[in-house]
Amino acid sequence: MSTIFGPVHSRRFGVSLGIDLSASTKQCNFDCLYCELAPAPAMAYQHTVTPVETIITDLKEALDKHSIIDVITITANGEPTMYPHLTKLIEQLDTIKDSIQTLILSNSACLSDPTVFDTLLKLDQVKLSLDAATPAVFKKIDRPDEGIEIGIIIESITRFSNLFEGKLFIEILFVKGVNDTAEEVKALNSALLSIHCERIDIGTIDRPPAYAVQGLSFEELYLLSRSFDPELPIHIVSRTHTSASVSTYSDDDILTTLDKRPLTQDDIRALFDTESKQRFENLLRQGKITQIERSNVIFFTPSKNIDRKRAK
Ligand code: SF4
Image (cartoon, rainbow, N blue to C red; front, side, top):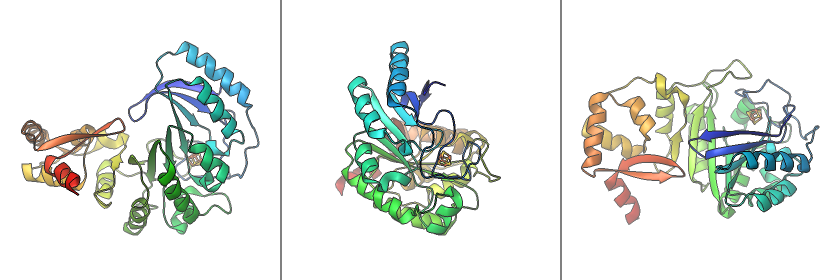
């Protein structure tokens, strides 16, 4: 089975070639309620390990076939930082990648391991999951292997965010009735305020989950997004945009809404009715709304808001 998949086009990361560090079986130190893979007990170590040479050979073949690649994404059927040869793999990737960016998608659990921490510092982009901030909810949603503590994970992410020179993204996946309570969002908000990152992607279940749990609607996600501090770079990532119901917004409503939380074109399409979209376009033409880019994602925000933040 090849260790390489794609290319796939991701709006957030561009054209991506994926490396699967556990291609034949699920190997993870979590057993998340929402996992797209079948449920499996969390484990501490990879039992099946692919040689680095196999991965590099597969990757070179794929790069020969596909000339336009923005990013090489290191992932796994499970947790990629459990791969015992990650440092060697990333060193070898650096010798063949040219201008292509390297990205890892991690559940953050191994970041307290100094070797993993130092290895991830060498990447161009890192995406870390943080689904909960309190021990009880963390255990309930991510079902981690014994000894993995959320307090240590948050401390490691914070330390990493202060040292990492590349682009750091945080991802939170919300499960209905589990980590979407006001109390948990408050705890997440407080943890996030100490983390320096490009973007915080919040999403929900959009594929069949490992266990019988439910996702949130786009409206519910949107309301949750407004509970976070307005300074946090929250971005709603959800295929449930299409099922959202539209509302009417006055000019003032639009500016106040964008002031609380910058929105993307997809959000606007999902939330605004036809007249409100027209008002939004007029405000944009009048220069009252402006665009900001956060790592490939365009957000709209009131121009006054930008001036206020620059003036700080
Ligand atoms: S960390 Fe990822 S692979 Fe592991 S159980 Fe959770 S969702 Fe599945």
